[in-house]
Every structure is written in structure tokens, then in C-alpha cells.
Image 1 (tube, rainbow, N blue to C red):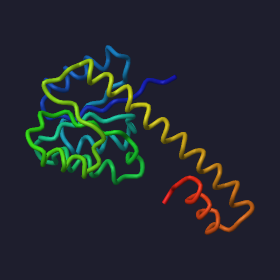
Image 2: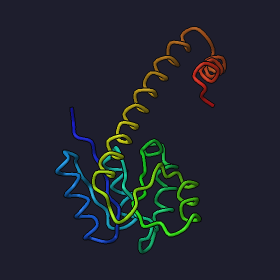
Image 3: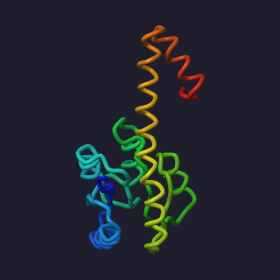
Length: 161
């Protein structure tokens, strides 16, 4: 089984290196980005299983990065965990609206972080398995009914809309 890939996005090199050390020690493959633009490029290349994202960064902030990740077909199912000292409910609300899946507060609790990563890293794997099964079912249905009927059946029985 291949290692899960976790992408760290933070403009503070010390934060990146501390988190990276924890993740490497826990057996994850790690890729790091120091800004939003680099994060989006790396996400396209590496297809991470999970993203740890700081909100406050120079240039493209974490909210914008999260929106881009959740809008792109290749990364929309990738869990995004915000690692930040969130100061306001407004920031949390904006992060959730952008598609953030969870929050890990700073200062960092390594056990909390690793447990959340373990839980959410499985999410992408399960989502991909679900998509593969859905495609198999779609191809079987298309052998017997037209595409409109196949999609109606999928929507009804798989609750896909």
C-alpha cells in the first residue's frame, strides 16, 4: 500500500517544517508549498490525499486556495484541514463556505493533528472507490437504457444530484 500524500501549505517555513517532521515520523509522504499559487501547482501534480492549509498567507490566502481546490475536479474530494489560530467566527464561516472540512488550532497539538489526518485521509480513498462503483453501475445501465434514464436511476438510488 502506498503512503498517503499530505500537502502542507503555510508561508511560515518553521510551521511547515514542524508539521512535516510529525507527518514523516507518522509514515506520510509530505509535499510543502509556501504560498497559494505553489499549492495549486503541487496539488495538480501530486494529487494529495489531504491538505493542511494555513489561512493567512501573502498573496493568495487560504480561503482562496481552498475555493480553488474544491472547485477543481481532481481535488474537489480532497479533504482540506485548516491549520490556523482562527480569531473569529467570521473566518471559520468563510473557511467552511470555501469548502474546508475541519480545523486544527494553533498552537499545534500533534496528537490531535495526526488523528484528524488519519480520519480524513481515508475520505478521499472512500470517495474514489464510490466514484469507481458509480461509473461501473453507469456503464452497466447504459447497456440497457438511454443515458437520461441511466442518470435518473443513479440519482434516485445513489442520491446523486
